Image (cartoon, rainbow, N blue to C red; front, side, top):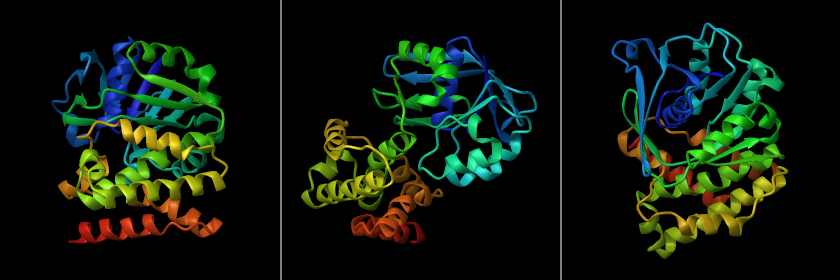
Length: 291
């Protein structure tokens, strides 16, 4: 199969390198100023060892591909889509939040978009060079994509990816947001890593409260999520783990607050659910970003 990756940051680079290492054709889409000198081989440092694989690089996607993986930041999506000048057979978005799925279906057509989520701590250290920090890569995909993606997913499992196909799209999308949203908000507002949050009773209480709020909105939205299961995942995280939003805030980069926090707040208003902890965390982060 032929694949393209839109969004050649940490997540796109990790997925692109992994897929290319399986012998699949991969084209990485980059901004024009990044094209000169972009390496012909992608490399990914993983806890289990390094992976290197060849990939094409281009500024626009002018030929049709089987799968377009989208891993941009949510606020970059509209601009980034201008680089896609052909119609992929299928689109697999790995963005944070829930709102992007309908945006992409409006752009490409409903049946072409196969929602997915990924949970991993990764970084881009240079063009074409990526590092997987966490010991896990959890890739969940909508069950509607199993016929198309089943074979490639089976091979990603050989690379120690944990992959599942999930029938309910709301469960797929909200399960990640209920985990990621509270963790991103609390780490960013506190400036602490997971271990430091757990050592501080007040911040840990805010984490669990924000997670309960997100789960309440998710359940009202038709998702099947288990707050106790998410807390168990938090409990098992490495002490030093930080969120991407926390790193972006520290570096002065634009934040994905609208994608990660706003769906929870909007859902609270829609369904009459108290999301005051989430609201307060967002206010703290906005003040930090402005300052």
